[in-house]
Length: 386
Image (cartoon, rainbow, N blue to C red):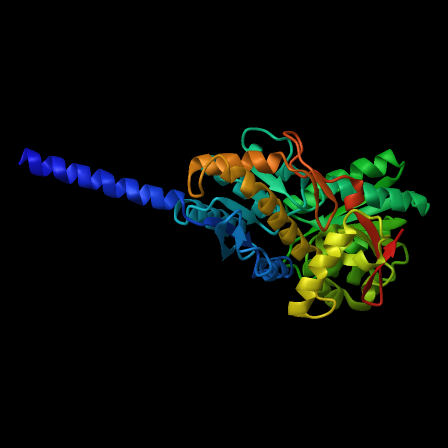
């Protein structure tokens, strides 16, 4: 009996060792939590479509991409993240598409010690880099970078007063804080601040309050097609001042929904939207044009959005970091995830579609002011403003 038990135990240990060894040498698994349905679908869909363009072999390892839909819902984003970590044993996560969902995912990836690259805007996703945010990175420009661009442009156009209307969520609140801060720095007074929900069908009440304040400019802090509602209502009500959007509207769906109401409005955004118009020495131009060529070959001329480019850049970060992590450990192990996190944090001098990435232990974005450009919307087109 003892001999049988010993042989069985040895066999079981050997089987477990083989299984563990197989898991350790398996392909790299990248999970994606994207808003493919719901109000933020116009952000998530181009991200999903970009996944097909990402490399399927890095550092001699096959790469598997597992895409889940968070339905633009915070609770679903958390559930998706838990599933990717506990059931799929992914080595890294890309997502979510929006700020509230990305913020909700931080605790989960920190507990699972799995690197996450967010596709959302808020600086709060990565700042400050504490024990939890040590596992979190992002590719889009921060709301602070974009708010400062708006304030500079507004000041140069003699704006003395502005109003704000934003989404009643983490994105809208975070962007308002930055807009108010940089407005004050440029001696611009904020005379009204309103909120609306992503699913609202009317913002007439909020717009009437804004018009009563007679602002020189209005800043809209919203993402995706829901962001078209405030400017449309402002124009319908006869507003003649400047209108600014944040960079959460950089796609064709927003232009389609907003239509003529967005003519003459401005937004700071990713260089990829106007890559062909950029000077040749712009650090993002070459990679942006490469991405545009690949994406439009699959989806047609004019189909590129900033949101797809953020996914492309996340892929570039991983393509740069995975070979470094493989020098330390194999995919599917905690050691590999830790090494991958460290390699991402050490990214230095990587040119992507938005600029030059210079990560550090205190900066998990790594982009400077060259990563943002100001554009005007004219007749459904993005026009670069040097």
